Length: 427
Figure 1 (cartoon, rainbow, N blue to C red):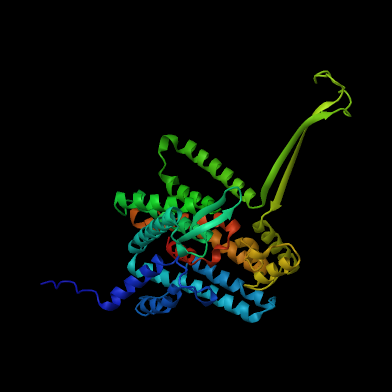
Figure 2: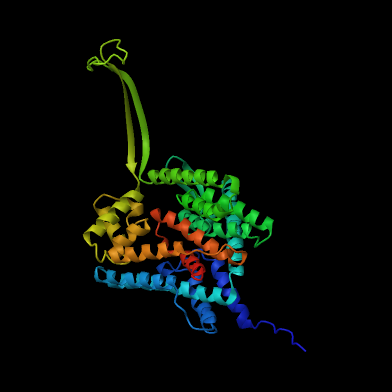
């Protein structure tokens, strides 16, 4: 006579629940803690113990594991170039922590599977966007303070607008989080992993969230969505749809990045007559009065701080190409640029706002190669498009969207990027 399966122990329930709590709160930057830590970082050691201790079997190295290890090792040479060893070591420990996030989630996915994690990455952002949009709406109508969920800011061309932060440090950070989660909503839809109404509501809320964040991350968000839909486009028109999608993304990418280089402050034009121009030697031009009509256009513009930071990062790399200025030391470069009158107050201690340029500036050639190698190998993972692999398919699209956004943000510090790496590890 078969015995009924035993009920899960409290340890099993905690082991299953803690990673889901981590994923649900991975974008929330409250309460503010030292060293840019978050509440989930305090929870992580407990979660790691519950997952690592009972984890069965030996670790079998995969290509992505080697890339993660190579990336972390590539950061070490920057310690020879830093002007503040303590700060750089602290930053190195933070990067090693991200490597631990990768390992712990690899083991969690191996023992528990992807289903619960994928559904959490659908439901949690939908809830955050719903609450955030409601808070911003109350602020717009009744003036109720939205707190960490959103607020007003002034943007070029748009003026004073309400923007959604969803509990993250900034609208841009929240938009990158939404770029990460969108593929999980899309994959859940195409693979029927959740009920239809559930993914429709989640997609609507997350779509509204990215619109009201009003950031450059919209490009990666669109790319992540296209990446999920790409294999499932209707056959008769797939080629045409893909061509239009690629052309549209390229135009959006160029437009957004042009706006991040310069901001147009004013355009003036004047139409008059230049009587100093001699008659043409050819008969094709109409010759009335001697001279020619003249149109003069004057454009007033300012460089954007994003561009100035990238230029400072490139100059810092050229000064120390082999070691960089030191891991986590770019704020000192920005401070010097501010002292020289090249940056203004809000950006005097900012990061480079670029993954590759930031790696070049802080960690030199070795760190930049390690970063690029890890991202490329992650994108080259080819998960099978089977229903039980929907989380892996979504992870690849999420990495692709974040890589597109990496032109204007350092994605290597994003905890959720390392969760996506873990999802791709066994592709």
